[in-house]
Length: 428
Image 1: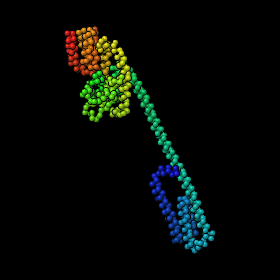
Image 2 (image 1 turned 90 degrees about the vertical axis):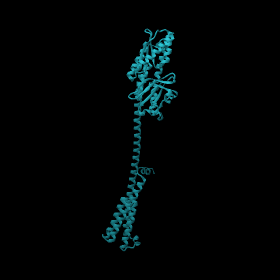
Image 3 (image 1 turned 45 degrees about the vertical axis):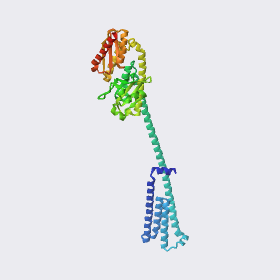
């Protein structure tokens, strides 16, 4: 049963049945034609009577050897009928023929030859079918083994790929770790921008600082290229809802089709420090495949990888801030202020992001005056702006990241005029 099933699996059943039927018709036609010819020869007396028996023996032998017992039996019946006809037409009584050995021996011999040759051929056919079934089984097993080997090969290639990806990931993680080993948060942000560009593939993006009021985002790093434009400040009251959701849900959001007219960025993602969103990454241009679930997972891990060293560095800076600023103020001492200036210079080389720096004299450095100025300037300037104080020359230095130097004169004039008026009113 199993063999038959496998054979049917190898050849379509409908085709097999049609072939068998056609083959049977051909064999029967051959038997009919041959014995009709022999009968015609006998009837027309073309050859001597002695040769008729030889023709019948030859026909039965050939059909038995060629087609087996079934068709050999049919040829025997046809030969017996012709032999009996020949005997009857020769004047022999068919009933008495049974008792005459001379007449019965050819008939018996004819049957024996037909049976023996038919059995011989049938045994060969059975042997052939057994070998055929064995071949089919071997072919099926070989096919299964080949499929199994192919599966193993695919699995092996996949494992190799996974190992290579793992090695690449380890190399990437090591590279990112080395890049983020900086002593200042501002330098870490510079390296973070490079990581986002090189390891995530963002082509135009900006990194924004979240104002303490939670109402505005201020540009820290502008990585826009070409014709891509990214605003320096994003005010929530006039910005798409996406930005508020980033702060509320602390998740990564993609632009929707209906947001296209609102100048919504392609991607907005948070950098969370101590369970609070401190920075927001805005991506305007990135490869499409990076917006898949796998790309989203990569971005999530990159931001987390950036957030951890950034949080540690900011905590250290907060602990050391007392020694970096003038007592009673948030004004940096000049040595620390110069470090921020050098960082902005590096940032300009990296991102082409401009910055503005200027200074202003003040009428003294008394604690009261400095505290007054500190309170006023903290409210006036942005949180990302840096103020330095030179106590020896009584000079206040201003560093405005992301501000075009073309606006420096007007900004400087406005701030200095405002400081002068405030100081005069305070003194009076």
